[in-house]
Amino acid sequence: MGSVNDSFADVISRVWHAIGADDDNEDWPATQLTTTGPRAVLPAAFDVTGLATGAVAVATVAAAQFLAARRDSRPQAVTVNSREACAAFTSERLFTPIGWTQPPLWDPIAGNYRAADAWIRLHTNYANHRAAVEQVLGAHDRETVEAAVAGLRAEELETAIVEAGGCAAVMHNRRQWLASAPGAATADAPPLTVVERQSPGIRTPNAVGQLPFDGVRVLDLTRVIAGPVCTKFLAGYGADVLRIDPPGFDEVPSLLPETTLGKRTAALDLTASSDRATFEELLAGADVLVSGLRGDALKGLGYDDEALTAVNPGLIIASLDAYGWDGPWRNRRGFDSLVQMSCGIADDGANAMGRAEPTPLPVQALDHATGWLLAAAVARALTRRLTHSVTARIQSSLIGTANLLYSLTPPSEHPPTPAPEDFTLVATNTAWGPARRVPLPGRIGGAPAHWSEHAGPLGRHPARWVTHTDWAAFNFARFR
View 1 (tube, rainbow, N blue to C red):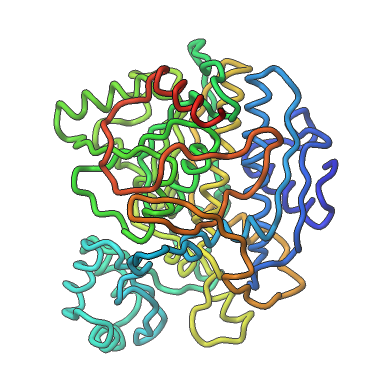
View 2 (view 1 turned 90 degrees about the vertical axis):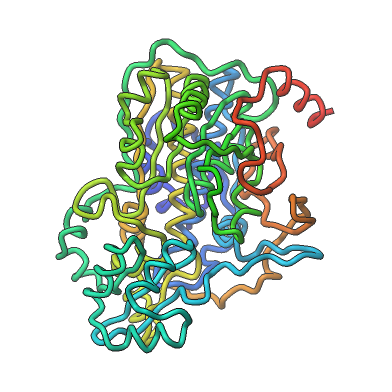
């Protein structure tokens, strides 16, 4: 593993293999990566610090390798600091507005509740998901929801809320989860799978700047945290990322200052013929499509893999979901906090910490890690499209990332919970006002990350790609 710090060597090797790479061949340069910082930053029953450091490392190395392939040169050195990686995994909490107020991260009735026989978590950050909970329970605030939940069986309540279009998860221990139908179906699910196919000779455009993904076009159909983390990384290293949402879509507002950074955002109604034509024009010009929709959502709109590749045979298609791509829950609505309840993480955390209530990870680590791993796989797919004339279908899931976390050796030390001031923040501008945010962790020698767009509301840009003239003008301004 070359110059990788010995304390992170094993976990980074595991994460490198998890994205389909091999640390015994030329894909892993002998002296490319250096890790620094403490081995344990975040206190948890699981190796969250190792997962964060490993995920950031493999994505940054993969980006550096793509830049080297475009330049036909040796990859630049990569450095990753574990404290900075862990800060990135809690970036939505550390984001600090200056002179303006950010909405709360959680809806007032979202959270864990004690049902008659078990704990259950309700996820109500979207208005329609809250409406489903209110419909099922006939309650509209935390006190009345708590009283209503207390008299119901957890599994029955979970089923009723999900059938009403909402989101909920009963807390299971690991054994219960693996014995269930959705758990058994995904027990061996990896963090991601990559299936390659021959590319029709389409090559990545020549680099027009100093960053790995300069000139690469990414169509972003992601929401919340995991997918936006992937596309924010790609944007930070030069990609033209265009996020598409339905007109009037109401994303969790507290996340937008972080998740829209570096991206243009447009609105298209994919049930309307004119907007479908625009979408297909965008597809035809894209290098990568990243989707965070439920398993069959794009297929339901007429855009399964065959339809997408018919429009653009060289397209790299990357998708993520919550509960995996096999089994009865492949189309289930899900979020990081719910997957932690379902698969045993919240229960194992409670047991390790001696607590009676669910004890999740200290950060939304499944979301963040999945985003970084997906970005690493996209970067590798771009490299292989350039060097081997193959393109890729990539599928990842939060449940697969949970399986990876379970495979890591639990930490031997539990540091105190870091305070916000323990992490370094940098100044940033947003459409709402100035702020301080977590910088992108990881460094590529000679290629400092930079975002071309301030964070801002959804649907504020035209649905078109940046032209070569636009890009050249931007790079002149950026690097002069």
